Image (cartoon, rainbow, N blue to C red; front, side, top):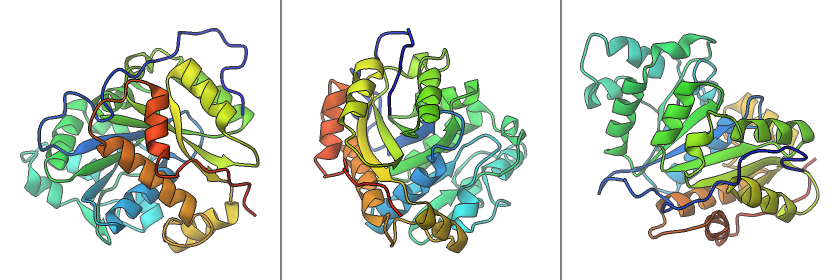
Amino acid sequence: MRIGRGRSGPPPGHLVDSAVGSATPAGAGRLVGVIGAAGAPGRSFISVNTAVWLAQRGLSVCLIDADPGLGTVAAQLDLSEERSLFYLAHESTLSAVDDELIDRHLQHFGPLAVLTGRFEPGCGGAISDELMGQVTGLLRSRFRLVIADLGPLDNPATATMAIRCQLLLWVVSPTPLGADRFDRTVTSALASPLRPKPSLAIVNGTGNGSLLETEDALVRRYGVAVGASVPHHRLACLEAEASHRPAVLDGPLSKPLRRVAAAVESAALRPGHLETARDLGESARSTGSLLADGAGS
């Protein structure tokens, strides 16, 4: 994977905030946004598996499908789209946005609380920035960690939601097309306000070879360190999709995905200041999350 090949652009971002953001109110949960370029690098896959595993381990976690119009969290977990962020938005015109309204739409996958989205192009406009701020604020008061599947960074609403997050996970596909899309995304005007954000890259679908070159490029150019990687294993992904049972629970991808979750937990909940992207990556990898796994079968 080669990042930023031959492209001129802005200097790399620099992480100057703490790993969880300096403006986090005392006692509030952390908001982690999972984001990436257009296409299918695996944002929802990483969001779902990370949230499921952290909840299984006993952490208080809520997963939000905030992908405007094309959310797939409900399908992956076999949950309803009728009780969802989309319908919560409609009800908010008639009632106050409070815990009672949220509870009418929260669903559960085991110990994980989930606010699903809706797989319907164009419906994201029904959810205002103000509403998203109210909902995430209430959820952060109730959960230690709120993981939001933001979808692709291709519209101002997603960028606004990403600004609210204390940590961003950039899901990157390690292919020439995936690298080019990532490069175009993070050098776009929409990404400009996000460059100071504490960020980790999750490289999804790796083949053989080391990721050190990839990390060097990401840190140098964008200020984003590699926190973890997941090897390519199409069969395991298809089986998880067909059974509505996340791949993190068992099977050949369970260990890599658990290491992703450990990297996210370490980066999102670690106290203190991490001044550079490489520091943040090394902190996440202290859990053993950066893998050298080869391609799966």
